[in-house]
Amino acid sequence: MKTVSSIKLVNPNDPLYNNLKVGQGGNRNPIPRHVENLKTSISECNLLKYRPIIVWKDRKKYEIADGQNRYMACTELGIPFYIQEIEGRPVNMVLRKCMDVI
Image (cartoon, rainbow, N blue to C red; front, side):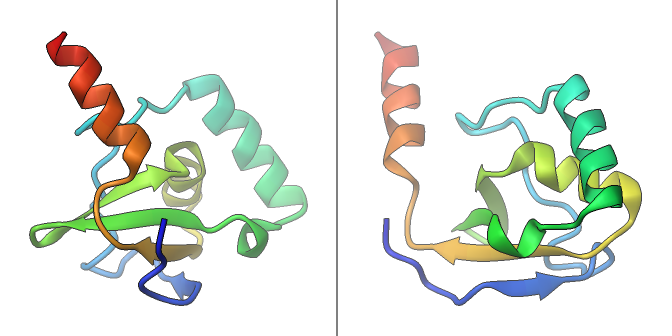
């Protein structure tokens, strides 16, 4: 996995990142219980800069490769989050798509 960008802080209202694909394209669906637990954890002790949301560009939109629960928690709380862009579709997402075909 090759990174394309450094870790950056993103405002949830930023039009480039406020509508990331979640639970599509082979990505896991967020788990409501995990999102709620993360909201509590983030509110008490925000350590998000140590676990950025990993995204990759799919044409003109960004898709989450890792961190869909963190993304949902941050958007529901309305707080900024950290992202890091990687190059190309992550291998685990490609493998999941291939397994769906078999």
